[in-house]
Image 1: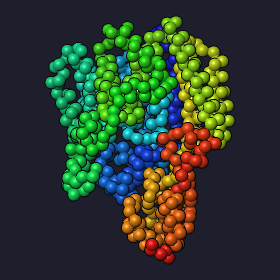
Image 2: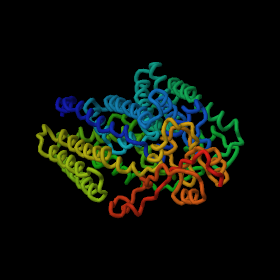
Image 3: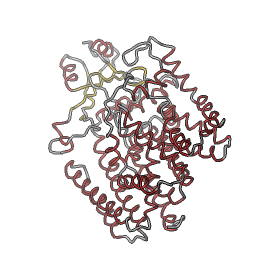
Image 4: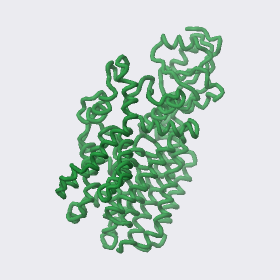
Length: 555
């Protein structure tokens, strides 16, 4: 295979465009609870109170994550209004930036064809696309890490001041997104590269120290905000304690405290968690990734040493995640650009070998397995218009099976994209709209008109981040009956609560109207009883939105 495959060059822009388009529908879907809706609400508070320093969420001062993603969402709210689309849009733009830097890094370390394949792989990798729908910090973090890495490559080769500043800015934004640990992800590969090539003198190169110095300068807004919100107010109760330092949490407890399980937020880690998580999170390319890693270990031992910048970063980060006691599947997303390069290089090397037939067979099996899963889910869930989802999936499989391919690499990529198209059309057009109707907070918030945004709104007995976000004004979280009495005195007002509490209030003689009774289910914890349309009603819990009138009596 030549360094510039004309066939790949010809279909690359069209597949890339398709992959990007498959990611877009999720931008218009409602935000999903809990994390996405919580983060969207924190950014909403910034805009509504014009307070860019203090983060407030879950009814109290909020310290868990740094400011950068919230600042980006708040800027978007300022431009487009406080909507779910405005919350997701900046993350999507950062994801597009990460696509560009994935291409540049792969082209620099491999060649243009590997870069094209890597971008195509990354664009439709499952959890990457899900991260664009259920937005947390990962799209921002991935863009910043890849951006920093590419500019560091230019520093190493050229040493220009512009690249030093750009690398420092991207690194600082990554730190202000997830914490200081990202220096391990960004710098770990470089340390291994310098060890392998015995370039220990690089540790004394003034450019890298200047880079670190600029990083510190660029994170000063974050440090100042934490100091003002927490260190200047030791009386604040955070994580059930007073005298909590925001700066200490930022530099230690938020990352290393979780790793050693000594911080205020603890978890129960399993060293194999990310091994099996990768197998589904990186679909439809998981088998290619595993085979690509085996290929590197067995047959590519004399690879270009500079590739250790990404190999080393991938290894160090994966080991760090696996040893951590706090583990969530979406953490892996920051590894996806490098996973994609490893997989793309393997596909590229295998393209002229008969062994690629085995990968094509695996991809074909996965494509039919996806069709079977979609059809099965349509049948079990009874999704509205689900038959169209099954028909669309079947048509995609038939087209991918009968079209004429110029080579095996094209067939491998096309069938991977066919599987991705089936999954994302089904998820964003059918499955997630079905799930999101059971986010009761969102359904209740629809009943509060923008014209009533000045009427007090509260939740008692049941709290919903989507209710807080989609309600036009602030939402108070009432934690005990005494505060409930005070809130009712502020009538007219809205109260979001459980069925039992609503019944108790209404039977006590409270003058209130039931404005909505949406059905509730924790949609991120799916169970077969809920998915089965015959048994679903048993798993649902009603929530109530009460409109308490002016003359409501105090209980």
